[in-house]
Image (cartoon, rainbow, N blue to C red):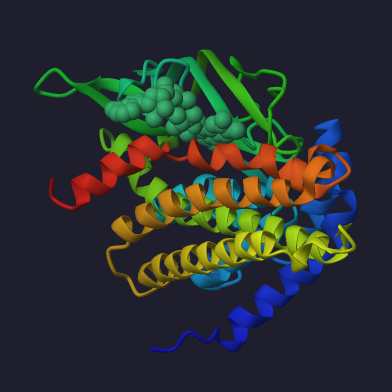
Length: 382
Ligand SMILES: Cc1cc2nc3c(=O)[nH]c(=O)nc-3n(C[C@H](O)[C@H](O)[C@H](O)COP(=O)(O)OP(=O)(O)OC[C@H]3O[C@@H](n4cnc5c(N)ncnc54)[C@H](O)[C@@H]3O)c2cc1C
């Protein structure tokens, strides 16, 4: 077994580490405070090819593997989770449905500009009354005279309302099956569609610089050809997308925990109490040792899930295990990082304060901890 990164994987990790340190870190606190979308950073990331990292070059991507992509998300999250989720949601949720389920024409029209980072794209699964219970979708799309006419509301959709956003792919009820159950399909809804509106950005506890909005559809009509994948398989297709998304959120959680550990280690060496650096106290050393142990464990799980995906194996169980474990590790590690900072950790000037707020969503987004446990139990055959 070889745990070394390949030359290409190492190069992407180094590139993202330097970019996060030199470009993102100096802006992170202000972007969070102002809840300002990081347009300049996103444009630079597009220039580096990050938005198309795991897609083939013929679709505008960089042709890298999932391990490289997970490393990129980790390095960005180590500094700024808002920037990391902007990339992760775009790649795993926005662009991947076109790659996995699009026709060649749809790939040319939608995937290519997304992989080049010229546009962002949303993934519209959640509704005000349908989150964990995603099959309870109320949004409807009726086929009338060659057009899907959409009515309904989507909640909490990332990257859905920036100046760079080209549209959102949604789940909608398109009929009922033979057993009388809702038939759910995926429909591509470009931003300029009349009747499709976005709310103002939510005012969020964390991921404040990222873009999250409610979407409304009032007789929003798109061509029949905007069906993505197979009619009636929309929920299954989106759940398959979420398997990959879990690797992203797991990488994001590991990166966030790692960043908090970096800050805590630095602080513990510098802060003097009772005449010596607090890093000399065994109580602090043990906290740092535990943080390091948990991060290492979570990181190996994320790498394994990404590797399984790259090998074409069934990665759903490992991805769910990694997502659940990494989310919980990020909570414990960030909490201890603030503790090591004492009162200063409660102050906004210290990154651990922002990291503490950014952490919570790791245990909620793309399947809550409770839903991960259900998924894992199901995959264990229970
Ligand atoms: C910042 C942010 C960004 C997001 N981005 C996107 C996006 O881009 N696209 C998108 O589609 N969605 C997005 N979401 C939505 C996110 O995926 C949902 O919030 C999440 O899946 C939980 O759904 P819910 O909020 O409706 O909670 P609910 O499903 O109402 O859950 C409430 C509580 O009940 C528990 N619960 C529910 N069912 C069960 C059960 N069967 N057994 C045990 N416990 C249960 C949950 O675990 C949770 O603790 C985003 C959310 C946020 C906050």
